Length: 115
Image 1 (cartoon, rainbow, N blue to C red):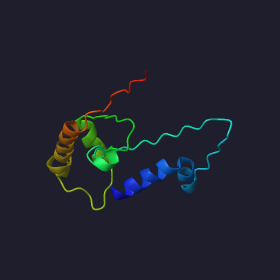
Image 2 (cartoon, helix red, strand yellow):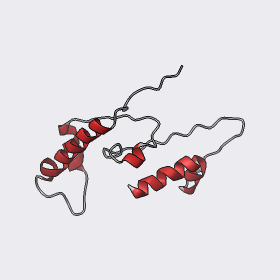
Image 3 (tube, rainbow, N blue to C red):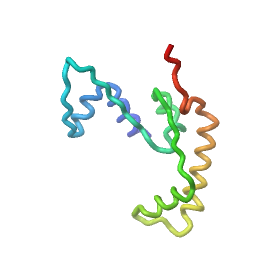
Image 4 (cartoon, rainbow, N blue to C red):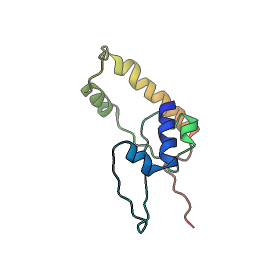
């Protein structure tokens, strides 16, 4: 999370410099207003308060158990997941973190009042 915080802080300080430092040569023009959007994803991002407090918008996209299991099983890990790891650890931890997030983060998917 510390690394992610450093990256997000760097983006917030100067998005154009952030992109250029990573090899993305973005052309900018003073005549055109530039809008930069940073999407931070992961199922733990809302549970880490210092990171969560930086977000302007929060959205949660859930996927069902079978899709999640299929995606996990298609990845190659070193060392590989032991048999039963997804059902015995990955999915239960996801559920615990999802419940915590729902308890502590109330503004997921809410729109700002634009008046």
